[in-house]
Image 1 (cartoon, rainbow, N blue to C red):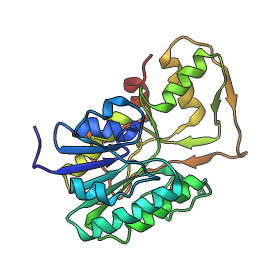
Image 2 (image 1 turned 60 degrees about the vertical axis):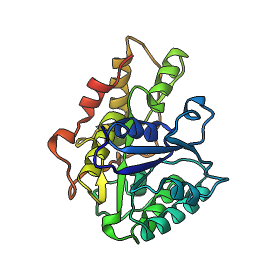
Image 3 (image 1 turned 135 degrees about the vertical axis):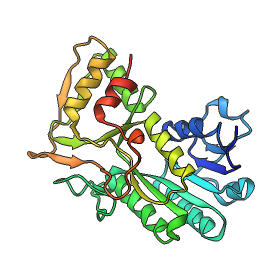
Length: 275
C-alpha cells in the first residue's frame, strides 16, 4: 500500500542508515534510493539508481525521479558531499520538493560541558562535525517548510557497524575501546526510521534531535551491550580524552516527538541488541 503517492528519494540507500530508512518507507510511499556499492542486490532493483558521489552530478537523478521528498543519508568524499548538497538545495528551492538531512550530534562536539538542544549554536572541532554544519547552514537558506535537519547521536542496532565491530572484537579477543568520561545519548535504526516516517506523515519541518531522552556514560553503555551479546570476558581499553566528563548528546526541547516515538538508552539495550 502506497500512501498519498508521495515520491521519496533516499541518497545513500545502500548504507546502514539509508537502507534502514528505505526498508521502513518502501511499503507506504513510492520510494527510490541511490547506491554506489558492489552489492549486486541493488542492480536488479528498479527502485535503486547507481549514483557515484564523486563522479556523478545529482541533477540527472533528481530530474529522473522528480521526488517530493529527498532524504540525504549519503556518505563519502567531503568536498563531493558539499557540492552535491549545493545542487540539492538549488533543486529543492526551485521545485515542489522538501529536503530531509541526516545530521549528527558532532555539530556540537566543541561544546563539551553540557548536552545540546535544537536551537543551540553549532560549533565543531572535528572535520566531520564541520562538514555537517556547512550542509546545515546551506539548508537554512531554504524556506523553513522545505527542510528538516535531523541530528542523530550514535546509532546502534543488530546490523549496525558499531555492534558488528564490537562482536568482531569480542570474538577476536581484541580490546574494545570505551570512553569513561563521555556522556552521550544514543538511538537505534528501528526507532530512528519510525521517527522519520512520522515526520514525513505529519509534514514536519525544522530541526529535530532524534536520540534517547536520557543520557549514559559511553563505558557503561558499551559494557551493558557486551553483556547482552553473551557471556564473554572481553578486554576493555579505557580511553581518556579529558580529565572531566564531556557531553556529546542531542536532546529534544522545542520539537519533541510523541511519547510512543521517544526512547531510552535502556530500551535500546533491552530490545535491539542480541547475539
